[in-house]
Each structure stands twice: as C-alpha cells, then as structure tokens.
Image (tube, rainbow, N blue to C red; front, side):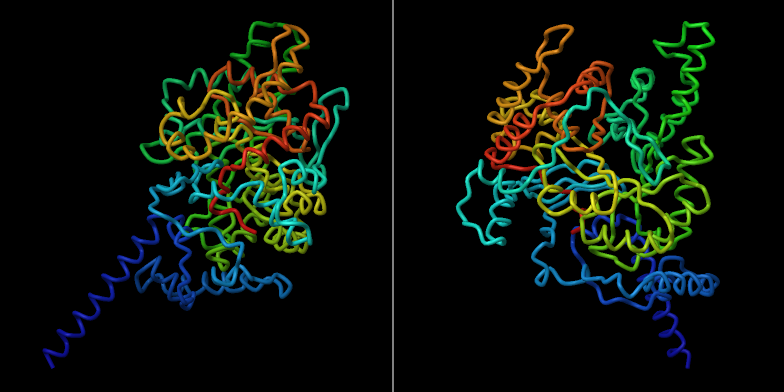
Length: 523
C-alpha cells in the first residue's frame, strides 16, 4: 500500500510538472505556435484552460470560461472555419517558419531571406520569391490567360484603383460617422521599440515635437498598439508617450505656444479634441476570453490617459492557427464597443475571407467595422491581388496602409552597398538588388513633380506616399524626426496623374521582388 501511494504521488507530481511546462511554453509567445502551424488535437476547453490557470481552486472558474469560449466558437453556422484545414489542403497557407528569433508581442526575423514585418508584433518567413509578377501570372492563368505575362501586361490585366486630386485635402468619415480621419496619419511603432528601431528615451522631446507639428498641420490619426514597446520597462511605451503628448498639446506647439490670441487658443483646442488615437490589441495566448480583450482595451485607455479610445483594433487574426480564440476576440472587441471603451472598431492583417466572416458577426452585433490595416506599398501590392481591396469596398471599410515606405526601402536611402541598419538590412538583402529600376522611375516622376514653392523635386518617399493616397488608402508612415515628418507632409496637397501611377505599378512589377506579408495575414 505504501509503495502504491508513493507511486501515485510520483504520478501526480509528474502531471503537475508537465502542466507547469505547458503553461511556460504557452506564455513564451503565441507567435511560435502560429509560425510552426501546429495542428494539435483539440483538447477539451475546460482542460486547456485549467492547464493555463492551474490549481484545483480555479477549476470551476475555468469551466465557466471554457463554456463561454465554446459558445462564442459557434456564434453562427454561416461563419465557416476552413482555416482549420491542413497546409496540404490549403494552397494559400503561409510558408512554414525557419529559424525564427522572436519576442512576445515583438518581432520575428527569418534567418532565410525574409522580411521584418511591419505593424509590430511579428515577421514573416522569406517570401521574396512570391513576387508581384508571379501573383499576376497566377491570376492570369486562373482566369484563362497565358502563363508568360510581361510586366506591362500584368499591370494592365487588372483595373487598378485611382483617385484623382480633388483640389483640396479632405478627411474621410469612417465607422458610420464615428470618426473623421485625416488623409495621412502617423505610425508610432518606433516610439518605444528598441529591437528594430533603437528607441531611446532621450529622444522623447523630439518625438513630442513631431507630434505637435503633425497636429499643427492637421494630421489627426496616430496609430499605436499595446505591443509597441515591450520589455525593459517599456511595455506600452508608445501609448504612454502619445497620451502624454496629447495632454500637453499645444503648450510646446510651434504654431500656438507663443500666441495669446483667443482665436488661436480655440483652434488649438479644436485640433486637440479632433485627434484620433488608434490602438491595437494583440491576441496573446492568455487572451482567450472576450473579457480579456475588453480588459486589454481598458489597460490601453489607462496608458493613453483617456476615457475612450477613438479606434480600437484587433492586431491580427488567430484564424489560421487558433480559430477558437478568434471567436472570443471578435466578441471581446464588440463588447468593448458596446461598453464605450472604444468609439470605433478596426482590424489589422485580415484577408478577404476572414474579413467577410468577422463582418458577418459584427453585423449581427450591430457593430460597424471602420478600418482595416494591411501592409500596402509599391513593393507589397497584395491587397490589390488577393481581393482585400474589393472586399473593403463591398463592406464600406476604410483601408489603412501601414509601412507605406516599406520600412525605408522606398525612401531612396538604401541599396545593396548601403543597406538599412540592423535587422532590416539582413531581412531585406534579397529585395535590395531589385530596387534601382523602381527607385529610378520614382525619381524621374519626382523630378517632374517639383515643389511649387521651392522648385525642389519630390522625393521617392513623397512619391511612395502619394501613390498610396492615389490608391484611396490612408497611409500611416512613421516619423522619428522633424525632418522625416516634414518630408512625409510634402506628399500632401497634390496627386500623381493616373499615367504616373500606372508607370509606378509597371515598375513595381518589373522589379520582380516584393516584401513578405505579415505571417498573421489571413486569407
């Protein structure tokens, strides 16, 4: 009997050790699960949550939470879940991961010729072999065209979106009238991220000047995320900075700080009240219930120092690897909207199929989807080829273009001889050789499109941003210095011609290379 009791005790201890190991593995990073494309047999939800929360005292609560998650997993029979198919059955599945370095909510970098992924949180295995020319070729073959397609014909085989200059910059109303967004925003991934952008707190005064000048110029969209700034005491640093800058505006504003005019004070107060801070909530592995997302929204609001976040966004979809969690995410952000924690709902890294599914769910909840963020620039025109653009148009969702400068590739600063510093240089090494011809076309157009006041040619960065504007998107380029901000603002107040946009499209196709999509980008 004693031996039997000792054996049972050893078994119990072994089980507990295994549970502790599983909890530790879950907490390391959701990204690892996504990249490995793990297709584990689904355990009972109660057991899974008990493993996470642990302890006999948590079993009853875990069972209730599991029941809640199961309920949201079956929100509607018409929300199918073909994302659970195996990679073998899904020709559009992302490539498997290869030797990734990553941090929770941070960045993953492929050791093969992959790309650092914009939008925070992730990176992709190498997909530089997936080119725009190849995508156009595939599309042509599927539609009965010839396999051998030239760059020019590939570009003209699909009608590209073009919006001409209206004579003035106008804001875009989104979310059934909830928000009015400026034509261009500011992305703040670098405001707190040390790993990729080398953030240093000593630069905070400069960042505040960037914020003030942007608001002075009429920019009212600032994009951030709860994962922008992780570790070393910098968790949520981007949100904290934005909250502080907004609260202090316009005391350091070049336009208003020295003015005693009551009219100027009213104008400054108006600009301050119109600022829209958009934050994204990461679907970390421990955020498996609707309440966890509403809590994340509350925590972001606290860091921002606001009662309500103007635009709350799901940072990415878990539909590719954990559809059960996906349903809880949808419910959670809809709850945050209903509770007034966020004023409008946005998404990020959703493809057309998953976008239609979440839109159907939100329609039943009477929650409008205001925006969708995707990587969109001259070296990443996937939204034009995979149906994302058309789906957004059908659903009335505004497309926000993140990383519109290709993390610096489209600024004209970098080449094979002068690659981007740090991880970007390593990640982009296979894309850099394809840049000269595209940049040459951009510089030729910029030489014609000179600044009317100074006569200075428009820069490649300004051409790239204006291309995004002509595609009817809201670009959100980053800016760490006043010089970068001023250059970005130089993309406003004019538009490329349709012929110039077509020439850039053709040059992008002929380059034969494209940056990889976010590993969490769904179909």
